[in-house]
Length: 336
Ligand code: AOF
Ligand code: ZN
Image (cartoon, helix red, strand yellow):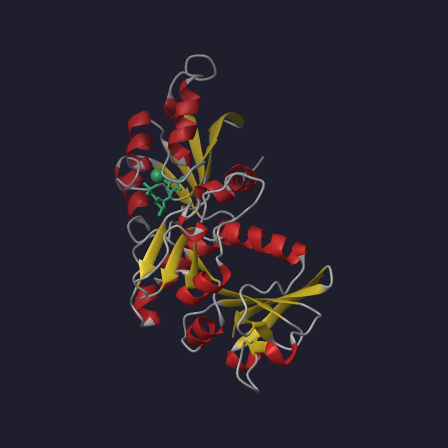
């Protein structure tokens, strides 16, 4: 196997933990003696050991049996090891202390706290470092993480369910189901990918939503962000029952989103009614719009998503893909 093949293997190890590592990046690591894999590891769970620590710990069990000293081994890792004391101690320290003398890194960490600094630290400690293998795959795997650190803001997606005549719900009526059961299942998978779900006070009152991801695999549930300055919130509502809810009273949406610049949120899914959705779409903050479109109309008692003559395209988005989910159509639009 060549370096790229080992990195690809480490990318696959990392992928297993897509839903539990977030909002941290998925990272995989391998320890090699010559061409033999001695140990493998990944960042499995947000807040717990990083990949490098896991692989070193796993290799320690084979010390004396498969190798005599860590100086014989090469560490392969998909992302530049961290150099900070966050939820866990710095990986650079663990690498230096282990005695490893060669490190091969897929891609530099875009997080400004590491970005190149960890590589420098390893080199200063007489470790041979090679960087830059399968970078595009690593960036693609950690799309939201790279976006957040490169743009200083979380990736924002607006999701709406629309009737064939462009309506959101019936006037004066609680909760309208517009799309099929399969589309609603797809929304659960979508939610599972995001670090937070943002909604507004009206949706909370009208729909009594849970706004969690109901999927049949283990995930780090998205946090909930409620934009509302209502003082009479009913905290017994199911919305408040599971994952952590942050109530935000600030009205300026740029300020709201800017507040997440230094927080552990790389992606936010906005699921709200026409008022809040249009407010977001009139800013420059939204990166993606997903429309689940039903073939059925709501008619004159329905409330429009957009004012007359406004379409998602006219708001500055291009259709990226479109496909059927039962009789519904899922359309994904990206910012031009
Ligand atoms: C690594 N190996 O497996 C991962 C890294 O809050 P913490 O302590 O978990 O640190 C999170 C940051 O560490 C994250 O923003 C990213 O820069 C880096 N992730 N680094 O050495 C890993 N997951
Ligand atoms: Zn680390």
